[in-house]
Length: 422
Image (cartoon, rainbow, N blue to C red; front, side, top):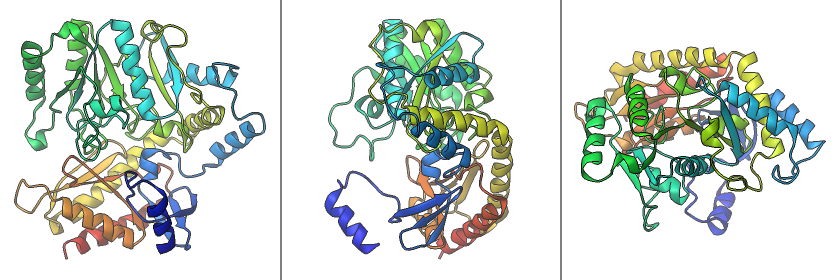
C-alpha cells in the first residue's frame, strides 16, 4: 500500500482525511478485501451507509435493471415514475399523522441545506437553532449548524449568520435536559427573539458528536416550544435513519413528529441519494425551481432506495438491529471490569458506542480510543472514533452482518480493548 499512499499524498488534497490506509478492492456484506488481499470486518459501513450490507443482491439487481433503462435525465427536465413512487413511500413511512411531500437531493449536507431553505421560506424567518456537538455537513450552512470546530470549521472564515447553538442535553457531561431548556430561555431573553427563529434542528442521536441520544421527553419539549412560537422542528436523520436505531426512523422512539426530516446515508444502500420529507404545506412553500439539482434523485439512487426499503422490511432489520445492539453492549459490559477506561456503553438499536476516560477521572481519553481503533485494525476490524473529545468508539456494522462474522468481530474487539491497555 506504500505506493498507493504516496500517489494519494501527491494527488489528493490533505483536507480529505482518511481513517485508514486500506484501499478497497472488493466488499461483500460486512467484509472488505483490500488491494493486497487482506480481509477486514467492516464496523463502519461507510459511516452508516450500507446498513443493508455491501452489495446486497437486491440492491445490485435493482441498480443493474435501472442501468439497462437509463442512468440520468434530470428529473426536473424529464421526470420518471420511480422518483414519484419513492416520494410516496417516504411520505407514508416518515413519522407524522399529516399530509407530507418529499424532495430528493444527493448528499446529507444537501438535504440539510434544503431543509433550512424550506423552513426559512415557509416561516419568513431567518434564525436556525442547533446544538453543540451536532454534525450537519461540510457546506457553509452545514458547518455553521455543526457544533464542533475541529476539523470542520477551523480556518474556513466567517460562518453563515443567524445560526445559534444550544448545549446538547448530555447528563454524562453534566448537561441535563433542564439545563438545555434554560439555555434556550436565556437565548430568547438575551440575544434572539423567538419570533425570528425559523426552526430548531436536532439529531435524535448525535452522530459525529458521540452517539448521545436525545433524552426521554426532551424531543416532546422541543415540539411544544416550536408549536408555541411558530417554529419548525427539523429532525436530522441522516445517520440515524433506516433501521439503525431499531426503528426505521429514530424519531419513532420519541412519540412526536418533526415538521421536516432530512435523510441520506442508509437510504441508498451505497449509492448517493438524500431526501427531505415534511409537512405538505411547508414543503410546498418554495416556488417552482427554488428546490432541486441536476443529480437530485438520480435514477440509480432511487432504484437502490426502493430496494433498501424492501430489504429492511423483508429481512426484519429493525428487529435485528435491536438484537445485534444488545449482544454488542452485553459483550462490552462483560469486559468492563478489565478495562477501567470504559465510562459509558450506550446507543439504541445497533447505533452503539463506548466512551473512554482516564481511569478514575472525568478526563476524556482520546489516545486510548485511538489505540483501540488501531489495535482492532491490525487484527482485521475496522472501527471509527467520534465525539467532541475524540474519546468515543462507535459501532456501525451492517445490520445484515452474519452471526459468525459478528462473533469474530466481538473476539477481536475484546483483544483490542485489552491490548490498548498495554
